[in-house]
Image 1 (cartoon, protein in one colour):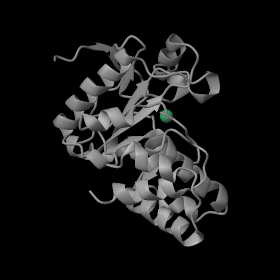
Image 2: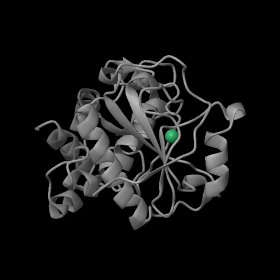
Image 3: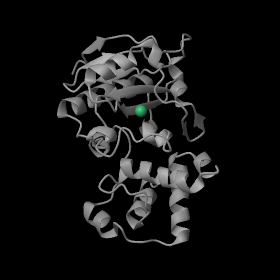
Length: 245
Ligand SMILES: [Zn+2]
């Protein structure tokens, strides 16, 4: 399938070109704005100081806003594993969706098809690892909710984009909202740090708030049925399973 890409360049990028080897991550976002045209305007207007490499419209059309080898301004303050400021190492993909603030809706099937095609193309081109395909909330959990719990992570993983667990729905449901003890909660966070969530959030003054944010980010990604910031047995077994690969 040939990828059809339109152009609408953004002035918001670093003028120094990066080596293609620097590109190690894909980061998905939703726009979080009511109107698609407003989102496109924002990302292509100098005053906003934000941008992304690609934009996926409701009808599935893909717009290139910043060429891959330039650093776009989509991730902001962010961390994953030993990486900080992920803009330097990533390609940002904005998907039109009004987000949690405005009646958060499902992504359209045309959008999902485009996400699939574009991701496959970029993964192959830059040899991006499965574990480096992330959402904005994964790398900035205390600030961001996007792309959110309606993002089709499981479906994408079934098509070799990103990673997912291998647990059955039955087993998951049985463990949902089952309480766990404090040492198991510690184990859960240890697992999260091994997966890549930044340890730094747990060190700050706002530790309790931040740990809840990481838990929610994990849930938006891997336990989308219930995002409550509370660690239950289901969360623990998912985190265990993700590390088995
Ligand atoms: Zn974002």
